[in-house]
Length: 116
Image 1 (cartoon, helix red, strand yellow):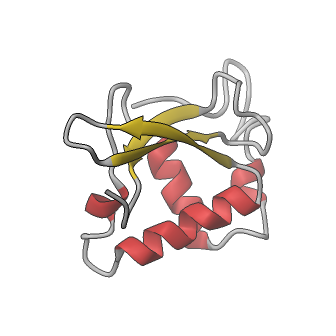
Image 2: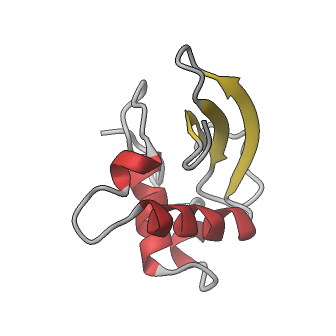
């Protein structure tokens, strides 16, 4: 499992617990962020696939990603198109707001729902 919190001699979540304590975020947005941050290296999450799970939708996943962006944990930028012409975005996600360049953050590229 990918380690994103704590460290040697650090109890609990250590210095990277802002995400879990941030009252601006819904529990669902926090859970999605933790899920994404804990994915193994090389994982290629897709909001459309996440939205196909029971009790979820593409719109619900998009809403949670928007929450994370508004709170400063996630930034988006255009990433061109894939080989099939699908529009991609690059997403940077971190455990603390504004920490996108830190080792605790993750970078993903995935299709932009509703764009092709």
